[in-house]
Length: 111
Image (cartoon, rainbow, N blue to C red):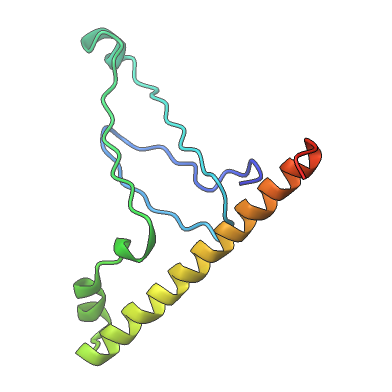
């Protein structure tokens, strides 16, 4: 959103990252390789595996429960709070999308 870089890092042949954006909107993922070996051994091709997870499903709740020593009830409360937060984010995204489209149709004479 707004052409801001959310995360910029260099990794070796393998890497893993996560980020949280508090701004609704479309995000772009840009990757590049600085390896000269890739051009020699793979014919210039690069294989990338992306596993994109969005929302509360990205949380590993058994790991959270163990780390924070949560009871079953506390863990369930955490899950419900995360779900409420995700619903709020989705509603905000829909609102921004709707408002953006409304402005677009006004600008083109559609309204």
